[in-house]
Length: 286
Figure 1 (tube, rainbow, N blue to C red):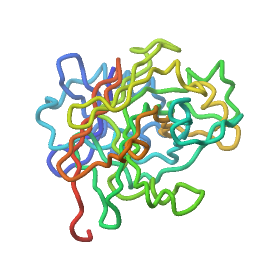
Figure 2 (cartoon, rainbow, N blue to C red):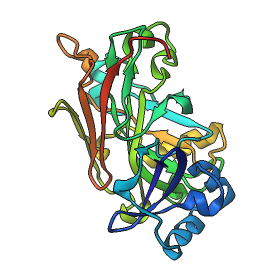
Figure 3 (cartoon, one colour):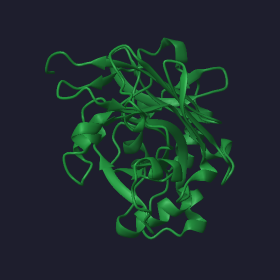
Figure 4 (spheres, one colour):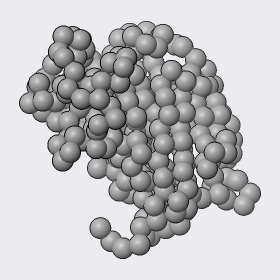
């Protein structure tokens, strides 16, 4: 099953897509517009059962716009340096534990929405990643039980403003400009992906392959990330974990390759789909 957050006219909502691209508007049935809110009210199994038992409301082609799959997460936990090739190209020291930083929900956008290169910089870089969404919350989740806490997976572009990222040893500034975190197009539930299944992640810039890796190349597995993050905080339904980018990022190329106005970037993940966004250079404050 796939879940989608979208706009129908001016209305923000979310729903489930069936095999013929018809949507059950779950937001309308539950009286809320965001997936994380719904997951805190109902179990993920209840949402799936509701989607199965309700008639469809509209066709996928009729939506006005895609939104970030989870537009209202309580936490977005991003993992850095989780592929060896990327660690080496950044010349960072190997660590015994994952590198974790936070993104703000209002930095996110959906599939086919413009990624904004801000007024303050021309150093906007792509980072293709796989995101997981928590369906069942918990604290100190054991790695061997982690899969059962996942609602599903999606593609993510953790686009980074590199010069601002380098302002300090913390990465917050470069990771939280408005409209830089692309997330989608849909959430593919774990009943369509086997536990520990090897997924292929690829990033294309203007049709050219920039990054390619598979999940078996992660330094810390998805289950290990859930166990580690839930050690220091409670994971709640709707939380997002963005699991790291492979080698091949633009700022480490010679010369550096940054995204510019009009560029198209696609994150493709096997079993999950393709997230595509166009780059828009901000020319006035908004």
